[in-house]
Amino acid sequence: MKMIFYLILILIFSIGESFAIHLDIDVEPRRPRVNSSYTVTFRIAVKDDEDPRVDFNTIGMNAIGRPSRGISVRTKFINGKLLTEKELTYSYKFMSKKEGDAVIKDIKVKIGSKSSSFPDVKIKISADVGKLKSFFVEAEVPKREVFVGEGITIKYYMYSKGNVKNYELKSYPKLSKFLKRFINRPERAQSVEIGGEIFRRDLLYAARVFPEKPGKYYIDPMSVRVEYSKTSTTNPFSLNFSFHRIMVKNIHSEEVIIVAKPLPPAPLGINFTGLVGKHSFKLTQAKNRYVVNEAIEINLEVSGGGALEAYTPPGIYTHPEMEEFEMSSDLRIIDMEKASKIYEYTYLPRNPLEIKASKMELVYFDPDEMLYKKIDFNIPGLVAKGLSDSSLPSVDNKGPHIENKNFENKNNPGSGIVAPIWSYDLFNKLNALRYINVFLLLILFGLILSFLLFRKTKNSRFEMAKRIVKSLRRGEVTYSDIFQLFQLARMESQEPLEVFIKKQNFSKKTQDYLLDLVKSSEKFFYLKGEETFRFKYDKGPFSELLSFISKC
Image (cartoon, rainbow, N blue to C red):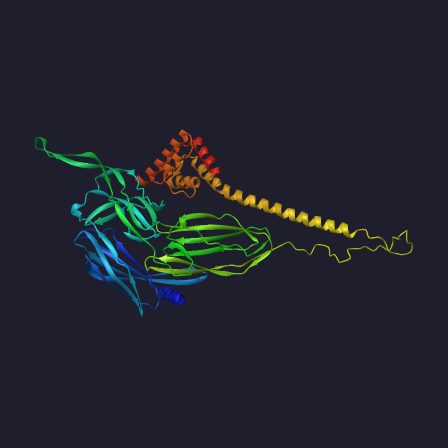
C-alpha cells in the first residue's frame, strides 16, 4: 500500500513538472495611490507556436481602457547551441478608489490544452495625494507572504519635492531574524508621478532578505533627518515680502510585517537543495586525466535568487583512493535579485584510479508555481595514473647473472664460468631501497603540494587586501573599496561594518580612524550619490588592518 502511495506522489510530481507554465506579474508603481492609475503586467514564457490566454478576477480594482499585448525575443548560446526564448506580455491599467488591499485572484493561464493556476496577488493601495506630505520615507516590500528561504529585495526610498535641501540617515534598519545580504548597487535618482504630482525618488538602502523559519518578520522603519525650506509671507508697509526659513524634521518609514510560510512537503526520493526560486548549476573542470598526487581542481557555479550564503553544495567525487581538501567559495552579486556563488573543490588522488562519468539530479522549489523542479547536470569522469614501471630491470626467478668469457675461474681452470658480480640478495636490497626512495619522494611531494595549496588559500585574501590598500595611498576611495576590504577581514560574517570594527582588538586610534572612514564613505555614497571621495591616508591603521587579515 505504501509503495502505491509513493508511486502516486512521484506521478503527481512528474505531471506538475511537465505541465508547468512560468508566469511573472509586475505592478508599476509598486505602491499605487488612491485615484491614481497603475499598470499590472503579466509575463509568460512561450514557444514559437504557443498562444497563451490569461484569466483572472479582481477586488478593489477598476480597469481603465483596453489591455495591451507585447512580445519580446531573446537569443542566447547554451552548450554551444543557439536558443531563442519568446515572452508574451499582457498589460492592464487599473485605478482604485479606496485605501487598503486590492486583490488579483483566480489567476489562470491556458496554453492549448494545458492550464495552470497561480496564487492571489495583493496590491497595497496607499493614501491619495491630498494626504501626502512634501517628503516622506517608504520601504518598498514586493511581497507580504513568502516561503521560508524565499528571497525578497527590500528598498528604502526617500520621496521629496523641491523644498528639501538636504537629508541625513539617522538609523539603518536592523532586519533582525532575517538572513540578509547588503546590496551595494547604486541607483540613480528618479522622477516619479504620484497622483499627478512629481516627486524625486532616492534609494537610501537596499537589502535582500531570507526568512529562515516560519512566522512573522518585521521590516523596521528607517529614520531620516531632513532639512527643508519653509516659505513665510509678511506685508509690512503695504509691500509683499516673502522669505525662506530652513527647518529640520525627523521622519521615518512605516513598519511592515511579513509572514513566512513553511515549504510544502517535498516528494520522496528527491535531492532537494533547500534553495527557493529558479537556480542554475554549472560544473567546470580543466581536464580529466591526471597523475597520482596531482591536484584536481573543480569549480561549481550556482546562480539564482535564493539564500546562497547558507547553501551547502553536494560532493562531486567520492573514492577511497582520493583525498578531499577543504572547499572554498566566493559569493558574487549579479543584481538586486540574483547572485552567484562559485565553490572550488580540490582533490588529490593517492593511488591510480578511474571514475566513470555520471549525472547528478538537484531540486529547487519554485514559489510562483509552488512546484519542486529538477535540474540534471553531468559530472565528467576522470583517470589518475601512477608512475610507469617499464624502466625497472626485469628479474627472473633465479636472479640476475653476468657472463664473462674473458675471465677464468682460478679455482676451476678452463671452466669458462665466473661467479656473478651481483648477488641475488644484494639486488633485492637495492631494489627495495629504490622503491623506498620513490615512496618518500611522493610523500614529500604531497606535503609540499598541500602546503602550497593551504598557503595559496590563506594568502590570496591577504594579497587582495594589500592591493586595495595600495590603491588607497593616493587619498581617494570608493565605498565599494571600503566594503570589499572589510569583507576580506570579516569573511562570511554579515554584521554591519561598524559593529565588526568595534568587536576587534584594534587600537583606539585605528578603531576611530576606520569608523570615520566607513561613515564618510557611506555618507558620500548614499546621501550625495558620489562613489569617490578624498580622504587623509594614514599608514598606521591600514597596517594594523592588514596584520589582522593576514592572521585570519
